[in-house]
Amino acid sequence: ACSASTVLAMATVNAAKALGLEGKLGAVQAGMRADVIAVDMDCVEVWPLSNILSHLVYACGRSQVTDVWVSGKQLMRERELTTLKMDELRAIGEKWEKILREFKAGKE
View 1 (tube, rainbow, N blue to C red):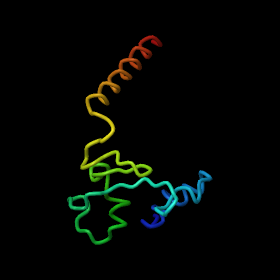
View 2 (view 1 turned 90 degrees about the vertical axis):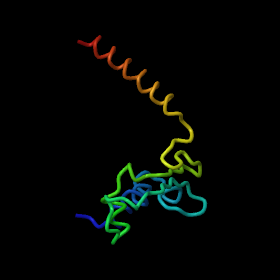
View 3 (view 1 turned 45 degrees about the vertical axis):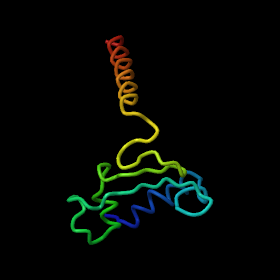
């Protein structure tokens, strides 16, 4: 088993190194591209909050993410997407589901 700090490093600084992007991403530092999330830690999944890093790595899931910033642009605010409308996103998903269903039917 890996420690929470090891897992976090694997997903951030070590991932950047593996992709050849060390110094460009993988850490929150001036001049680096950063994706940042805000997490709701006031939920039963992470109680009791005795080790924040461990809870972030091992207990939190997508339902705890409240806000998302990618390269400085906020894409989710208070669990609502800021750049996409849900009805448009649903329509795109349904369109592709239909295309894939028709493609699959043509292969049978």
